[in-house]
Structure formats: C-alpha cells, structure tokens
Amino acid sequence: MATETGGAGGGGGGRSDPAAAATAPRLPMPSRNPLPLSASQEAQVRDVFYERVRSKCGPEIKAFADCALHRTFTAPFACRAPHRIMNSCMKTHATQEEHDAAREEWFALRMQRAKERERKALRKAEQEAFLREWWGLPEKDREQAKREWEKLKRGERIGGGYDRVSSGGGAAAGGAAGGSLEGGKGGDGGR
Image 1 (cartoon, rainbow, N blue to C red):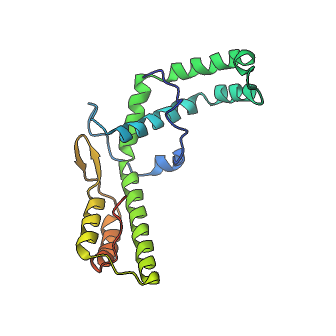
Image 2: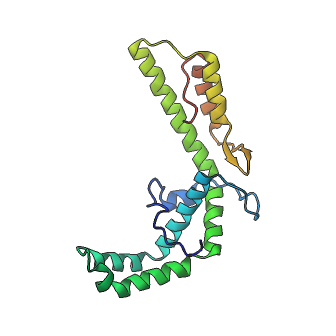
Image 3: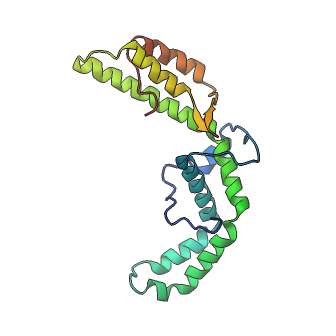
C-alpha cells in the first residue's frame, strides 16, 4: 500500500486549500497506535495521502501530462521517460511515514469537519422549514426533530465508538437551532 500512486483513490475533490487547513484549530491525534476507522474514513485518509504525494511530485506529474497531451495510443511509448520519472518520484514519497502523516492530518482536522457537518445540517433544516412553510406542509413532529438533532450532535465514529468533538461555536449555533427544532421545524441531522 505504501507505493500506491492514486489511481482509484481520488482526485482530491472537495478538499480545502492547505493554507486554510493550516490556520484551522486542530485536535491532537489520539495516539500513535492506529485506531480502526470505517472504510469511508480510511478512504478519506487515503485521499489525503494521495494529495500529499501528488503535491510533492507536481513538476514530474506536469511533465508527464504535457507529454501525454493529445496522444492516445502512442503515449506509453513516446512518454516512457517522463512516466518513469513521475512513478519513481511518487514511489519515493509514498512511504509509511507519509501515510502516517496523512492519518495525523486527517485526525487533526476533525474539528473542522464537525463544524462543516453542523453548518450543513443547520442550513438544511432552515431550507426544509422554509419549504414546509411555503407549501403549507405540516411541521415535523418534535420527537423526530429531537432524534435528528441528537444524531447530529453525536459526532464522528472513531475506533468503534463516537468521538465527541466540541466545535467552538456549537453552543451558540446549537441554541439557535435548538429553538427552531423544538418548535417542530427540524433538520435532517447530517444525512
């Protein structure tokens, strides 16, 4: 796994820029021992790993892409040298240490992901309440809204249990949303 170069792993879509990630508040990695993560969480770690490796081999990747541009059948033959240079760079940087660093980065950005998930859920709740009011639909019952809100507040599952990540503005945002949820205009809760 240490020498994978990102074929099926992802294109880095949906990633925030590194400058914003560097300034975001981070939580420390729970321990040096690897925690069991779900398949989707491992895929996210792998995407971070691939992105880090690609960023270190940018010029080599660019050289190969420029060579392969407008070529189909002849690309493997005409661009053999740039392809080997690109692959050797990626193999050099695709180490276990780099994978561990990507895992630590993924754990460090848990707070940012929790805030983003909460923001999306609140926005969805507002939109749903507006649509229900607009179309004259009945409001959600309070129990369903309460269950969805609790599901949102549970946090991310890490290591077989829920990890409660405290988001800095959660109390104020939760209080404002809690009032509307208890009033029957609830959100989906993170789906």
